Length: 106
Image (cartoon, rainbow, N blue to C red; front, top):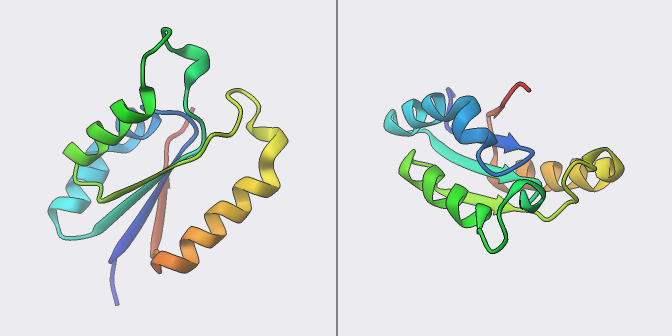
């Protein structure tokens, strides 16, 4: 069967680009469908009016990611939303038939 679809999970905008961006780009270049899910908008660490989700969508698209799901869970409080996060991941896995998951290490 082989590697067909990858889901990359990131807590904040730029986590995936910096944490596993080269791997995602390599996979996309080899024809693997790469999706991403980002759990926060990253507003806590951004200048007023700066659109971090748009920046990360553009960066991930440049790496070959075909779809980015952006959530709005509270920055620095993901532990308070674990059930909702798990449900979001499970739903995405079922919809995309993902064969591998990538994330970054903090």
